[in-house]
Amino acid sequence: MGETVVISGVGPGLGAALARRFAVEGCQIALLARSGDYLDALVDELDAAPGTVLAVPVDVTDPAAVTAAFATVREAFGPVSVLVNNASDSARKGVRDISIAEFEHAWRVAAVGSLLCTKAVLPDMLDAGRGTIIFTGATSSVRGREGAVGFSAAKFAVRGMAESMARELGPEGIHVAHVVIDGPIRDPTVTDAAVEGDPYQYLDPESIANSYWHLVEQEPDSWTLELDVQAHVETF
Image (cartoon, rainbow, N blue to C red):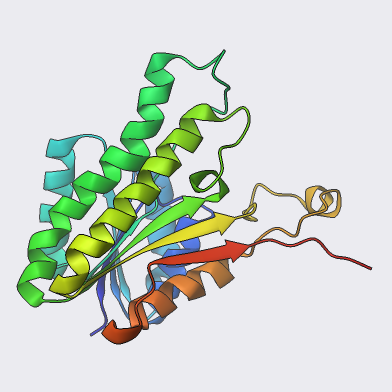
C-alpha cells in the first residue's frame, strides 16, 4: 500500500495533476476543496488508477470543518503520511483597491488554511516518526507582484511558515518543503493562442507533480527545504 496523502486546494490545474501522480503510485488520496462537484468528477476520472481517491469538500479556513475533514480521511484510510498545502485564493488587486476583507481572505486561505491542515496531520506523523509536508509557493513568495498585494502577502507568509516548520519538525523525521512555482501553470483554461502569444513557456502541471513525488521519495539525509520550479524564455 502506498502513502496516505491529503491535498488541499484541488482544482483543474496543479491540484488535479498531483492527484493523478499520487494515484499512479498507488497512494490513498484525500482531495480537499470547496467545490464538491469538481472533486467528484476527478474521483471518477481516477477510478481506474492503482490508488484510492476520496473527495472531501471543506473550507480550509474553518477550524471545525478541517477537524471533521481529517476525521473523515482517517476513518477511510488511517493515519496521514503526506500533506500538500496547495490552497490559495485572492483578488488580484493592488493596495489602493483591495479591501481589508479581501486581504484577510487571501491570508486565511493560504496561511491559516495551511496551518490548520498541518496541525491536523502532525499527530499522525509524530507518532510514526516520519512524514512529508509540502507547501505550494509562487513567484510572489520571493518577490512581491504589482497589483496582487493580498496574494503576495499570503504567499510570503506561507514561505515563512514552511521554513520555520522545516527547522522545527525536521529533527522529528518530518520533511517540510516549500516549492516556488516560478511561472504560469498551464491548465484547461489556458488556450493554445495564449501560450503562443506569451514569451514565457507555461509550466506543465504534470511535470511539477513529478517533482512533488520526488520530494516524498527523498531519503531523510537528502531532504529539500525549498525547490524552485521555473518557466523560461526561448532564445534564438
